[in-house]
Image 1: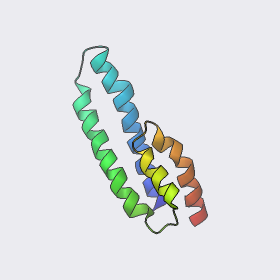
Image 2: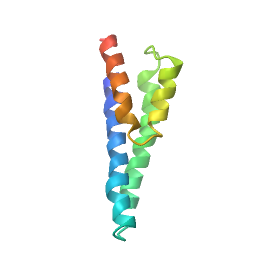
Image 3: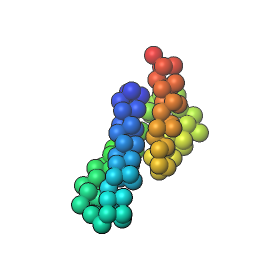
Image 4: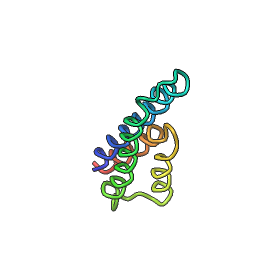
Length: 96
């Protein structure tokens, strides 16, 4: 289950990068807002899926309060899911 959550976290992080480094520069630098609604919606869905998957995939897997907080905060901080992946990988290997 942690492996599935890691994949969801990476997808959420990629959508964040696409929004910040592709869609928003196209809108604010080049005046073309065409990608913001679609990439924004994909990112919003990925964010909600991340939070739901966190509860489904990580519940009962031995995460401390700090690890829960860190994993939750990772969704709110740009690049946070990438930075948190090391923790998830260690937990995944320990569970195996």
